[in-house]
Amino acid sequence: MSIFNRDPAARAIKHLVERSAHRPTVDLTPGSTVVGLVLGSTNETTTVVDLGSQAIVRWRIPWPADSVTDLVVFDVVEGQLAADIERNDLAQPESVTLSDLPRRLGTYRGRRVRGWLEQLASPADGPLFGFRGPSAPYWEFRGERPSVALIAADRGPQLLRRHDDGSTWVRFGWFGDDVWLLCEDAHAIRTMEATRRTSLAGKDLASALGFRPTYVLTTLSMPIDGHCYKSCTGLLPRG
Image (cartoon, rainbow, N blue to C red):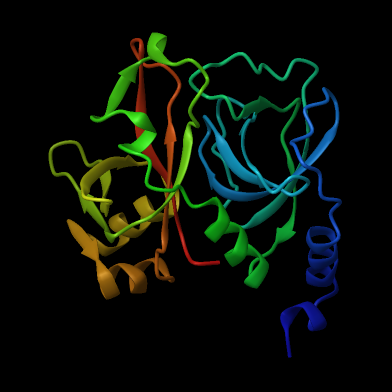
């Protein structure tokens, strides 16, 4: 029997997601209520599928200075747009600002999510984010290219841990490029720490994560010393 049939809360989430009114564009009305399906979350940015438009949006959430995001992949969350949603960042054209912390409603996954991810996966369109290398100067962005890419890797992904600084990296192949990105996915980082391995790939990685990573969620950072950096903010299953 499906979990949606057994659990009233799960049925409510299923109803909310599947009965959401579909709009052709993202609602950007200041103060409006927005509902999203989380693809990845850090304190700097939370990437969601906006359930109204089924487009990818980045939320700037005003987390308290002493807290860390507790949102995880496929959480369904509800928030309110700020009075000033700050749509003027040319390096992150998908970003909007929330007025307060979002409310977690539940979790949703399954065939519908698989379909969304397949549709949202980035096509082959040159190098990741339009430039080679780990970063680009902020002043070169014009708001013409997305700052989020959901990658269905050709090879990998592989997780690696560096001895010198303890950082975790994701390596994957994408249309002939060998891509290395700093990993900011908290679950992936904890997985590397728990296994005490310096490298995880294939079946070992799937076993450690608890799922087979099908997609790599990549984002561009806010400017750091004038440059925006590529990073991995989520490893996602098929759905």
